[in-house]
View 1 (cartoon, protein in one colour):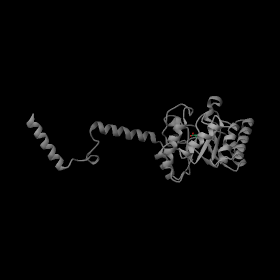
View 2 (view 1 turned 135 degrees about the vertical axis):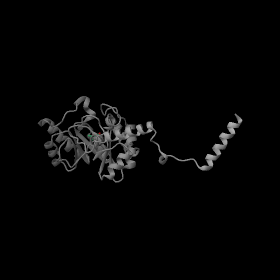
View 3 (view 1 turned 90 degrees about the horizontal axis):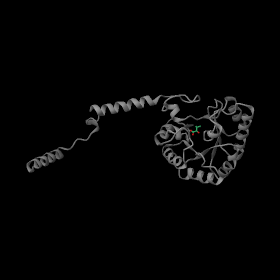
View 4 (view 1 turned 60 degrees about the horizontal axis):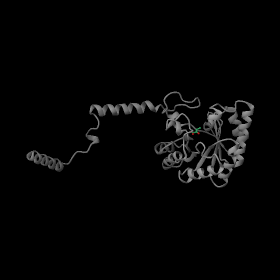
Length: 264
Ligand code: KIV
């Protein structure tokens, strides 16, 4: 699984045979330039999900429920339906602990597939910080309890963010649903990474759990510098990128200019 936020990236991810695309609320940071995911709205999630769905091909599209869009059960159901009906997502990812069990159950019994996001939860960072979870026995037991409760409530998968490898392994072995890890080691059923981290579109340091499989920002910057330079120096556009006027138009223009000269 990879995060994608627009049509061309969905097309490329599908062409690379990546089976699941996540329209993550990480778009608040990597696309919008915010410090956190907290400012992302429902309208923005719907807008980006629509673009991804148009390019997803065979890939399965999961969209994130943004911050506070499920603060109550009623709001959660209403907004989940919007992401599915208006956005076109095939499933939803929801961050939370046991307090969102009623929502997960209400959605899954009515036919909306849900992936529950546990471990480090960026939407709760004001309260929890951005710390690795499952570092002690209490925290590990809570993660296991959450994992089993979400499976029981009908979730089809769990996203495990930033927890020790061995804890993710135990969770994966303890449930029958898929686990998708980010910073959770290699024993999960699958992995997810953020598009910009993986492809080198973020300037500066990337998270420890990420690896740059390409460094595209310098390549794009060079192409843009070359373009601007060629426009300034007159090397772009050339005849190949231009349309020449027809001989008929040229002679009509000449006559028009002559007539104007004579009238002046
Ligand atoms: O929003 C997001 O991109 C996420 C990541 C953890 C994959 O939830």
